[in-house]
Image: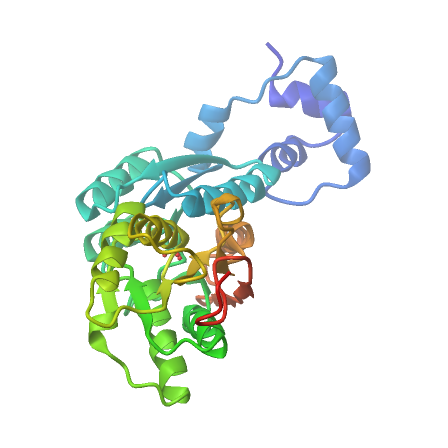
Amino acid sequence: MATMRDVAKHAGVSVTTVSHYINKTRRVSDELQMRISAAMEALNYQPNALARSLRRKITHSLGIIIPDSANPFFAEVARGIEDASFEQDYNVFLCNTDGNPKKELIYANVLVEKQVDGILFVASAGTAHDLMRTLAQRKIPLVLVDRDLPDVEADSVLVNNRLGGYQATRHLIDLGHRRIGCIAGPSDLTPSAERVTGYRQALAECSIPIDESLIVKGSFHYQSGFEAAQKLLSLPEPPTAIFACNDLMAVGAISAAIKSGRSVPGQLSVVGFDDIQLASYVNPPLTTVAQPTYDVGMLAAKLLMERLQDRDLPPRRQYLETQLVIRESTAAVGVPA
Ligand code: RIB
């Protein structure tokens, strides 16, 4: 079986140059790349990936940890990560934690055992001290995606959630709504807390008193949005509009409104957050705050691979902007749709 030395001899280059070409550890000129590639084909040389990874402790694999693989938002983030990683010859392992910090830690240890080169992490709770400790001990680079963790110095890709919550609520105020419900996600997760802050900021800016009974907690899942909306719609003075902190809960709110005999948006306007594909398919199509979800994934992978090239880079926090997408689930108050 041909060896790396045979390839080097056939191509008329050093073994070191062949090693740099195979492991992508240094740039090799186009001309030499062609000669090495031709020699590998002529000799039917198969690089030994496992031996290479053991020698260099580089496996060219990454781990992705997400809290809910059934939520299209995380599937699209993972897609962006996977596309960017694959372009750079990295494979990915996708781990779903069901929002369970214990499962999160189990998967972190599995990925450590698999000797992944780095991890892209969407936290399922407000803290992840054990997981962070595990990765720090093994010096495995980490990128925080979508959810920030307090007192953690790591590369992060986040969106401007506060502005997104403000945009959603201000849109409803501009339509004349004054009784605006808010279905929050888990309060220990930064995206939800920041969106509710934006909701409060828009009301305060328009001198609309904040009625705490209009703010109901959900779990980012459809059913929690349905139940939270039922609670809001059974208030003595029900809201005429609801801002839900993600699209799955917003769709649940639409279902609850229709079940209560209300039309959307005629008798209740609903705004979501994420702009998953479902948002444009649901009836009526959902007004929502679009996240650059795929780009969040692509950028997170880019930051991680730059970190793998230079471990001494200072932590980078990148914020991407959201955009209000107005569809048919919102209308001026009191105007029959
Ligand atoms: O839909 C899931 C939610 O959790 C999204 O809004 C995303 O930002 C994540 O935090």
